[in-house]
Image 1 (spheres, rainbow, N blue to C red):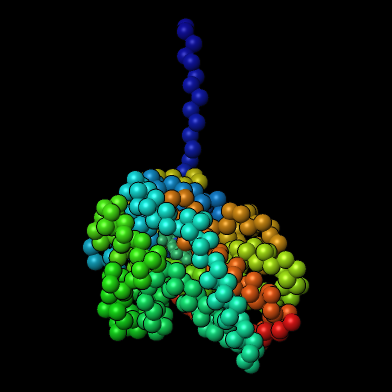
Image 2: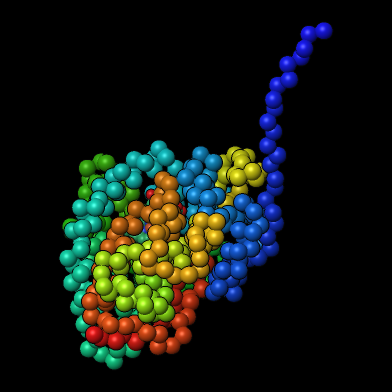
Length: 409
Ligand code: HEM
């Protein structure tokens, strides 16, 4: 009797996402997200977040895998909780850079990248250094106890970002637009409704600000309009890009610098170590954004049934990539909950990963470096001068108040 060859059949048994009942948008979680992060990572590679009917990913390796594979995990359903493709989803106009997959994304990204090259970004350094030094001197001339979110970080970013991008500025409008942007990407909860109420008087102002006649000749936004004139990008794209930059570029950097200052105010020895060589400021900022990741979560949508780390996922489901949880994953980071300006932070996900990784990250780093260097040059110590307060925002980890004492040298 002939022998029947036995073929080796490898079978992978896929599991289902484990249910997790914690609501990531509950107020107490937004104020203190770490227990949720831990529960999410402990639930396995993918959890089913039952409060919102979406998947959630909190491990570093899995988060990176999602962000790096647009074929399984697309941004075309929007990067917020709601699926933008579904009728009735509470949604804003799609972002023409971020909420588009390759190859269309690749073409537009290449055009925008030309205006954010290392050489272009370096061109902003002198102005940022000057503005940072002037602001620190002004603060040291005053009472030296400052509410650092408003008087230090916001003041600085509102000046240097607005100058570089070349958009018009109104403080109340910009704050309201930021609150709208980063609450809109969560559920329609009280934070969302309050942000939408607050922004109403400024919506027309914001719409007009994205038009050519309101952007400064020579600024970054102006370059987008020149690209439109040259036919390299489609009509209407320059306004959409300007809108994206204004929505995404300020609150994020304010959040990252604020968190860095908070941790440094608690670590006087690290402040002294940075003062020995102010070029270390950049690493201090990276670690601040790892620890208190400004964009806590971003979403993708599954285009077909697929698998992630042995877990079976269904088509047309939103997948929350919890960058804040991934950035404190103990499988990736030693002592993940300790702030350490000396840490090698390469691979942190605060600026995302894959096709849509943050196009403004060099600018954000430069802004942070110039402000921290100006402080390190003139301030012997930064000390807590009261309790910090976190501002609950659906998508963002950011401080509302940070009272600091600046001790001049
Ligand atoms: C600390 C500051 C910042 C943080 C933490 C941050 C974070 C991020 C993250 C996580 C993404 C990817 C989102 C996703 O994949 O779903 C992203 C994309 C993006 N960021 Fe930033 N960002 C910062 C500053 C900026 C600045 C200063 C600008 C503008 C100059 C900017 C413009 C953008 C744009 C346009 C994209 C979309 C890129 C694309 O889709 O190709 N960001 N950012």
